[in-house]
Length: 103
Image (cartoon, rainbow, N blue to C red; front, side):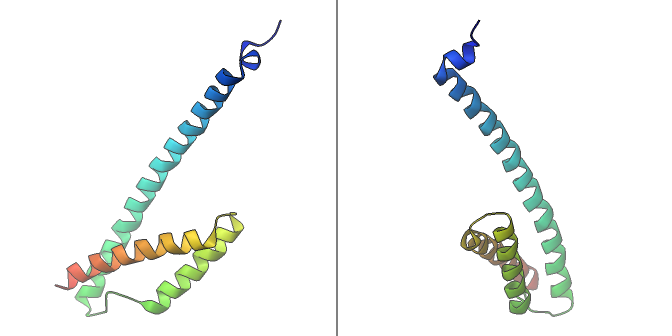
């Protein structure tokens, strides 16, 4: 007796696609909750900086973080330029939030 899934390659592909999409959906949720947690911390940093008259941006830390993330990306077999661009986007969002606290 032949397995019906292996007999129908389209159905087998559809099942694989479904599993991949379920994994992607779970990972997207993890990303959203992780970013939310990260922004909670950066909001606290922004408040601290405002309370103590510190600048909203810390270029040396940002440079170190970008280098660190690029290295992690290489280890994870992720395009380091994508990781750098992603972190730059997040950093710019954080700086905007910090500037709001300074007003």
